[in-house]
Length: 327
Ligand code: A2P
Image (cartoon, rainbow, N blue to C red; front, side, top):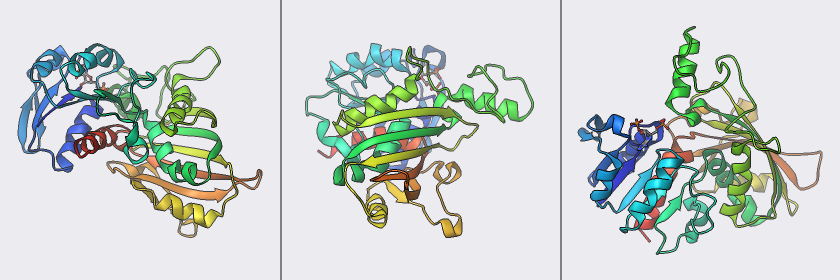
């Protein structure tokens, strides 16, 4: 089968290639596309070399799947051109996530949202994926009444320019092409995405809208603060969860640990809790600091960490493709 990766030279695109190889899919015909700037460049893949093509050429190849991570504008323009000829597009951008006709999928949770006729499937935002997966057993067993989320997001979520900015600042250099308004080295800012008229940011609003859509439950009250931190390995999230029923904290810990794709790392007596350095390059979502919130009934706190480029982007997209393929 032919698989196209659109945005293959980018941070997520490269990771998609890595995950495709790790998942034993390297024997398929892999088409790598990016902007005109990169056409003709070589990309190493599974011991061979792939040549970057234009998106138009990738369409001509009529791949069975096209994994997109080339920004919302590219997805808006090109995804329908693939879809109309029968290619299934799995799109990592925000372009289609809110479209009611497009399923927004975390395979462990809502694969059933995909209909056989769907040709565009949206991959959720990275911070949403790791949180909804970590909490999926609680939503199922107890129902979630309210979420209060604070994120500590890696610069990798902003792309290559942000990593370059951090590394140049770490070396004491002036960033050549800064991704942020402010220095990120020895700093952080409560600002991810763009500000909306109500004072929240687009990254905060995504956590609200996408959680409702993935759980198919608009009644959950959700409020979020997104913070960018000088970290590269993954996103961390402090989540305060009010459930609809009472719970036993030991049972909750077990339920979270049994969730496919989730590992509980939670042993305060040995200073064990998830950190971005543990999550980096891994597909698992790590959960720790699971504890009762004594200030309010039916409420707990936990800490969720995952590599935002892996389960938050590339891994989830490849898993969607594999899941559809095996339907
Ligand atoms: P290129 O490397 O040629 O600019 P990142 O999120 O890490 O910045 O990566 C963005 C990815 O999207 C890159 O592979 C980039 O290609 C690709 N891209 C950006 N704009 C376009 C476009 N108009 N058409 C196709 N690919 C694009």
